[in-house]
Amino acid sequence: MSHEVPLPETPRAAFAHAVSDEHVLWTVTMLAFVLDVLTTLYGLGRGLAELNPVVLALIPVFGPVGALISLKLVVLAVAVVAWRALPSRYRGAIPIGVAVPWGVAGLMNTQLILVTVFG
Image (tube, rainbow, N blue to C red; front, side, top):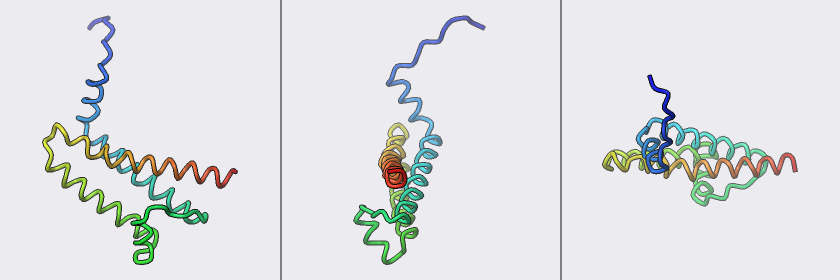
């Protein structure tokens, strides 16, 4: 046992540690997936417009739920293939690269919904 205070990790070491735990990264990616889909569907139900041209093109064919889910599943499939193809050292970039835009979209949707509902 020691009474020494542990030294904080350098930013690079902290990032490397976070990226090495891929289960956490994929969980965050799936949470971003759910946030984006749910807030988009809620916003569409409240009369807001979809801005993604790919989703707009798919809505007449699959409906809003089918369009969102099918597009996101294609993105996830490509991400998983890329993740498997990369050396393990670089794999963490894939779920981060998918989660960030989905998370940002979900947060932007949330902000727009709150402004629309509460003025």
